[in-house]
Length: 81
Image: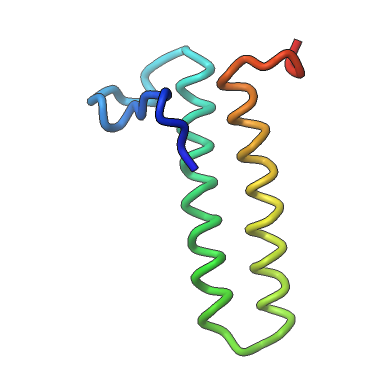
């Protein structure tokens, strides 16, 4: 779900923790959230417990909403002003 116009600090050789740029940190957090979403979706398919499936699905959906907020912040949309 990464926006093609955004730079991945890890791919550019930049340490995302070594900058004071808020967008760089937001991008890094958004990427980590994406990894958790992917993991939750995979685990949802690995378990038989209906409550666990619902928990993992809810986790993924909630984090996707949070990722959207990070994407909006990174694009500096009017909602953040």
